[in-house]
Amino acid sequence: MAHSWKFYTRTDKAWRALLVSIKKAEHSIDFEKYIFTDDLIGRKFINLFLEKAKKGVQVRLLLDSHGSQHFYRSPVVHSLEDAGVEIVFFNRIFPRWVYKYSWWFLRDHRKIVIIDEEIGFIGGIGVREDTGSDRDTYLEIVGPVVDRLKRSFDRMWLRASQKKRLFRIFKPKNNSTFDVLNNAPYPKERYIYQRLIGKIKGAKKYIYLTTPYFVPSRRLFKYLRQASKRGVDVRILIPQNSDHPFVDRASHSYFGRLLRNEIKIFRYKEFIHAKTAVVDGCWGMVGSSNLDNLSLLFNYEANIESKNKKFIKELENHFKKDLKKAAELHLEVWMNRSSRDKLKESVARLFRKFL
Image (cartoon, rainbow, N blue to C red; front, side, top):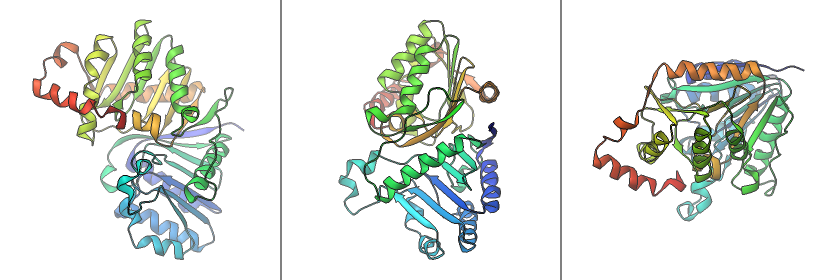
């Protein structure tokens, strides 16, 4: 069976597509989000979940207890459960959470939705009203890879519900046109990180990366520099300003060295929350994982990778279109910023392993 897909490049458009698919669901709805809120847009989803559960559709919500903490405390949770909706919060908030390392760093940052085990959604969007105008990338896909998405969701559901505490996320295939890449906070299960590093090491022509937050690990930084020295065209697209100023300062602390190594940095004039990668026109990836230490080393993440030329070309075209709305950063301009800004960046960089 061949794959078919559609990209949504604005959060509000992705919401509409999700709501349409949920409304059509006949058997099951598996819904995994880092951020889900009980606001105007959240209520649209909640009302559909209630309606579908009352009609006998299996509805499972897997939400992160930190990212969705406002919904976690909402009385509507009980209304949903009374209607038959199954809800599991990953890494629940406990009275002593402030002392718990795992509560701070081991988050479920994935954004997977599966309808009737046939239609899959994956990418960067959450459900919060004030993000509707964000430039993001969300993928709707039909085909064999949806079964892999379902397996990924099921394993995370088991862990979050504590029905099975110990499990291993499945390894990606090496010969598939489409596959799911999972990341877990264990060195041998960081498959997104491992695959990205491998593709960067093997790049010959170009590397196009889009991320809202860029705080790279030492290995990622090293292999990007090495790729540039080999003559590979390395381009990183980030927002002019993200929604986390402290993370921005840590990110800025890398810009000088990146630019000196002829790595091109483009700053999107609005907020861009997309997480995509394209290498040499032969490999592409989209999903929930940022290019920072939290996503690559600590969080649970899920991406889809592909070797399909048409799919990769679409990702690449989105990237090039975004560049037209971005300003390239130049070394001589960047080095003239104030001493105060440089000091703030140096301080933020001290916390890079936690960002």
